[in-house]
Length: 183
Ligand code: NI
Image (cartoon, rainbow, N blue to C red; front, top):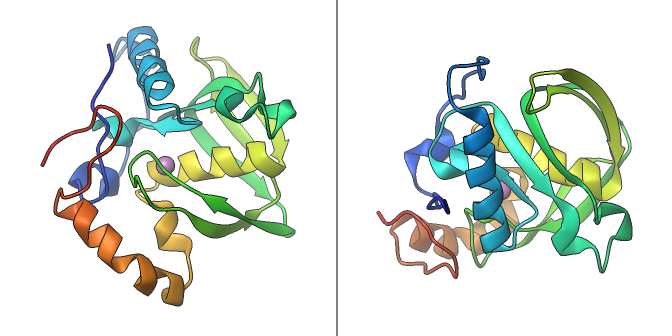
């Protein structure tokens, strides 16, 4: 089932998230719904708060980016209860967008390499290291679990320039090309 995506201004995006306990929700069904929602919206990542669930779970899907980033083509994965273990000092800046902030893209500086510990859909623990675009997607989604969106991380000048767009989103004046939650 395609779930409505919560846009900037919805309180769900700013709520603390809770650990996913095995057996507490139908995780397989929730992941299937999130994947369907992400594919329909043609995004490269979706976190539970973006569909109104305050849970520590997100999906990445690099297949939309395969043309520009061939190494992301089969980067399709779920991260449950993730914890960032290490961030590189080396950073990179790149333009980001977000399904919760349609019509906005801004440069965000992030660590270039990360190590993350997480559970998969069977609640098995993994520790993996990602670099460049994969690291960026994971950090962007991880931010959603910490109640952040990418515009929290842009410069005050750039933020003042997108203020009008953010206000329109918060007021429900923005139309997205995918299913989203109406105010
Ligand atoms: Ni996002």
